[in-house]
Image (cartoon, rainbow, N blue to C red; front, side, top):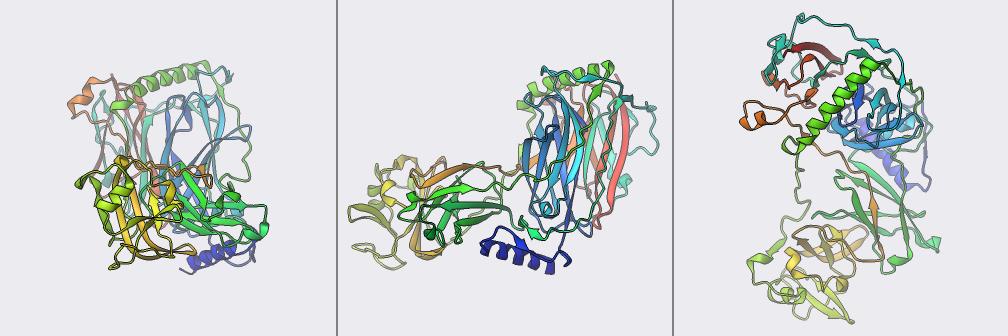
Length: 549
């Protein structure tokens, strides 16, 4: 608890100070974090998917309660980041995947994973993977990778119900045989075993305790993604205490921030699930300000030591088979999709608002008519040749009411500062109008009532020179991965050339068994079960079985 309070204190200081760094005494104890990444394969072919699970541990090697966001980068041998993902951490655990498309060239790559806080002491997870693109013009050098030792058909202490199976046969793993503690957290990967040994020196359980830098440059993301931006204007004396609004295309209340004397602002976004957001200065002269986001997402220090990929003719033939299998599998992706887990999209505020479902009433063509005939809690008035939505306090009649305090208009999660520009919006596109009849303090402004407008498509975007659109990296969506089930008749009609038979980052160890099915591919398959116990002890179980013709 003391450490969390300490980190919150750091956040408040960094936000309040004009400098971007905070000088501290590194001899004092600060919590540290370490990342371990479990993933399904060290060599991937175009058309395959890399699946991974993130474990974020604190200095006691238990699941960290600090960071809520982790970052993953795929770094090429020229030190350029060619892919980056943002992962939501729940109690130190998250997962994701990425598809190996044809834009990724053959070569050696580094998988890097870290939290924003870890960058202060230059600590990150780093492992080497190889990617082969048979469709590119790149020629991989020929060499002599070692062949993997062959395994007999029988496995000692097998965790599966049998040691060999036929095609499309059910495989059962008895969870009790894994001898896991009740609060262990594991992932499981089942894939065809490579017939060669890669020249890797990866150590997934290595932890390095490094001294924290004297200057804290990167804030711990304790509640979600921290977005850092800045406004600028010709008059630098007018940058402080400006209200900044951030909105995303949804029906939630926009976020608010206030600038410091340098014009800097910070937003803390609990779960950023969109790749587009909108930022505006809430001011009558907002168009004179320029808004920019300061990118601090990527890792500062890049890795080195990229061992060259050298493949024999036999391995090239094996890779070509994998590429063929991947193309067949992807051709049937539409019937074997992973399911996106929907967010718990609870309304963030105001249970006592009055909601008008416009389809429950006679539809009117214009917004002015709609407010006149339907919306009895608010009205549209012409004040100084500008239309405004007036929302009086509860119990006060709207007839003839003109307030000195403006009301707040929010459309699909966006603040519309100029009501006049919205009055001509097509009413046929509006699903609901909701009214809150009370004063509301938002940012450093006070509003007399709030009007929420939700369109059917929830895709309204503000039309204003003072609103700037930004593209950002969203969180990886939570998924329920597709599991083949040959008890279903519909699945028996499609080809099945999976080399990755099973991947589950969220194994429920309270169940009796894990069930999956073999594919149309024969050969030796390996099972890897990885994770941690509640007390931070690493778990690694490796086993296998054969699939016969």
